Amino acid sequence: MIARYLIVDWPQFLAALVLLWVPGGLFQGEKTRYRDISRDWDDHLPRILAHGLHTIDLLRAALGTWLLLDSLHSVQNPHGLAKYAVLLTQGSIRIFAVWLQTVFCRHPDSANAPFAFVVGLLLTGMAPLGSLFALGLAIPIAMGSRSPAAFFPVLAIAHLGVGVWFGGRGMVLPLCFGSFAATLPLLWALLFRRELVITYRAKRHTAEPWESPDSRAR
Image (cartoon, rainbow, N blue to C red; front, side):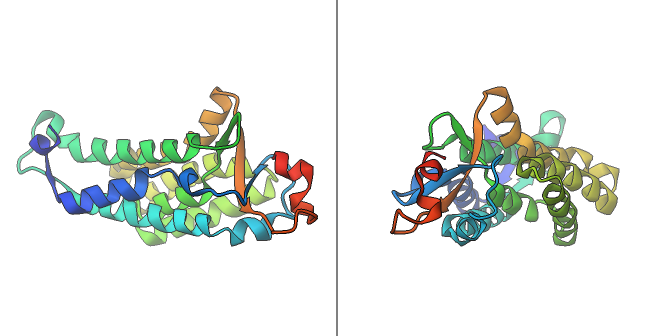
């Protein structure tokens, strides 16, 4: 059905699906710990940033999005639904990708806060300069609000606003898919009463502060 409305580079397309749709939670091992992002996690920040899975999430989301956008093209002289086939396919795949990263969480009654994955997804979703500009707006605003969860809606608004500024009004519809994908983790947590958690890697010795019973519970 998809080939009827699209010209598909199947190797790139399938590689993009693997990169985007494999949940990062599958690779969280025994040393992975979870922390509610609504709590103070300044002391845990070095351990969070050092967790290699976050870097992998950013890179695979960026590469997967680039492959996805490059693998789908419209047929000649599209009519009706075919005019929007590329846009709808790309957008739905990216939204579903963020949903998978969010809902696949080994911690009970929680959802992953896929900060790195969302950043990677949006980095290659529009011109690099515009993406970096949107991040440059979203990160300090979220940090200033002292609410890490605010990063998702702030980034979504910045992504849409900056994208329209750089690309014009014709970019509104394409950018809406990326913006909705960015807000999805927070929306999912609010709708289904899940705690958004972020992962970090534990040390070997459980006597360390981040290995306390309280931090293990989170």
